[in-house]
Image 1: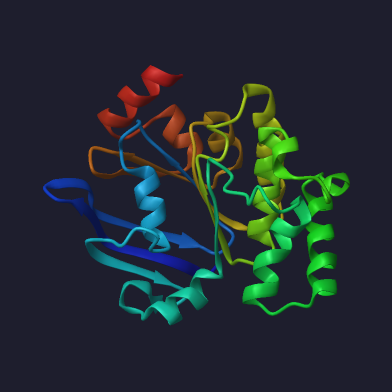
Image 2 (image 1 turned 180 degrees about the vertical axis):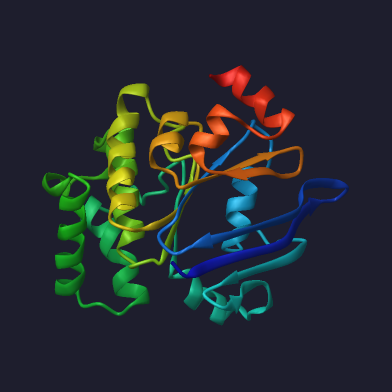
Length: 244
């Protein structure tokens, strides 16, 4: 595996409040990272700092050999195309049909023809199990279905890495599984993924590596089985005792 992403001394601060500091981590191509930790640990802000949706206060994010924090906006936008993002609130356009939501970025950004974008969108909708929902509007879908459309939309840009910001936290419990199943399949297909999640079963079963964030930084990086069975830090032990 080759290194896809390197995070060095990353810091985010709002006024006097430090969200995280001195965060160092690496992501290999094809690796699935589960980012775990208590609420308020800065996990979502950290994820957004990786693709500079949140500008870091200090530190470096090196993606495919490019230091993102130094790039001009136009160069950054080109690289951002390779970093897909799936939000907890879906962020679909309500005035567009499902297939139009997926076609929009490939046509506008990658200059795909309508026919090419349609073919791609149909393939991706079938991949996430929603081939029969092309012409409906997001409002008529369940939360789980909307999130699967959001995943298909992210995949339409052929990203090299996908960032998931608590993708199941807004869903009813019975819908969580259908989204996690799509994510498991992506992992099996070799997609590099960073997933901020409260789904411990997913982290244990699917992730290659756990990053445990608390108290302003990554406290522990380990394999899932080791993290859940024998965490190295007291902070991780306390966290697991509360949730397991």
